[in-house]
Image (cartoon, rainbow, N blue to C red; front, side):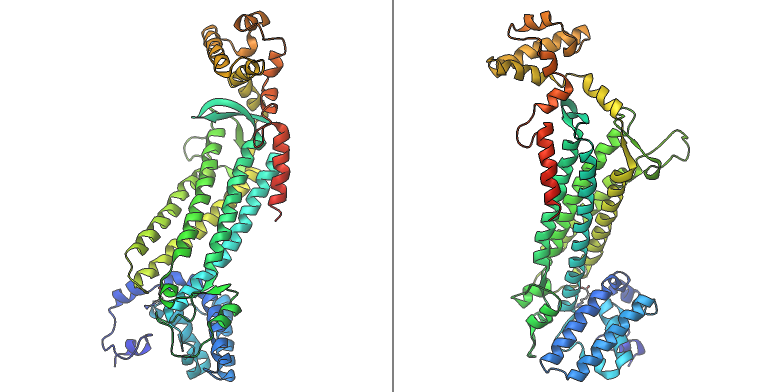
Length: 464
Ligand code: ARG
């Protein structure tokens, strides 16, 4: 019998050693080591269940648990570092366990397969990460809220088609992102519910001949339920795909905000400045201050979307039940988790301390355009002129102003009254940017009263 085969995790049916390149190709230890703490936790629960159901003795159960906990300590201390010979984290742990506790270690895998084991580990891992990401979303929302609170009356141009449309409160603009993050937070809550189901005890695919208690191990691991069908249990990765979809939307939101920040800090817009702690320079152009953080966030969104696509494609042709293709789920999932976490952290810091709005530039911006044109039409409509008629009249006056290089506020009362006799001196007040914003007091609008209420509602919501 070949030496390597003796130490591998599989049965004695193999005679020849695995080609070293194939061993490397097959191994997942380089990345699934990320799951080790969850593998240990899952194995502890399994060992306790085996003892409780009498499949192994209580003493054997205790030995297994103690050995697993020792591996945890060794791993944390850096003394347990399995290499490619272990194939994957599950074999690595089982092998080390047997070294520590002796032959009883070989009982751990009773009534279990790596198929239900890896599914359990991945769910335990993702549950933790979902928690962390939801907390990070809360911090991100808090920073948006803080920034909105001091900017209710800061007015910025609002755009449609990236053309000046109507001015809005900066707080209103920031709270739009807070709402997106709220949906992200809720969506992850949904994903969590479907992640929090135990496949442990589904065995390789068909269940087991042993009198196991799946509900007990699930309860020990804090799972809310167990998979009802063993084939589904070992081969379901819906939860991972759902997570990647939710993660992709987080990245869409962060990327949109990034895009705006990149505009805002450009010389062309000049609405904000980057502080030195969050900006980078150029190696050749000494004057440059670059928005690398939002650019990286925008760029990194692509890899998360890619991972979602990868998993959808990975799953679509898989017959029941476990197939080794499923080993490919991990790097996608781990990278998406790390990317989302890193981007949320960076954007939270950027908003908290890296961005300074230039109020003088913003004030000037909203004073120097036609984004109050709708308000003239609304003014006339409020005086009984049918809106479409008013709209056409204002279109005409904008055209005249453009030709004369004037703004609406530059028109004399006489010129206004030529446009329509119903116009009075209060038109100037009605088209001043502050009033234009304040007047949009419909529910969900940018009126200051609405924005203050929205702030209060958001503050309540993110406290939940
Ligand atoms: N490393 C494997 C994975 O990540 C563990 C499960 C292996 N199961 C098997 N039947 N070969 O999917």
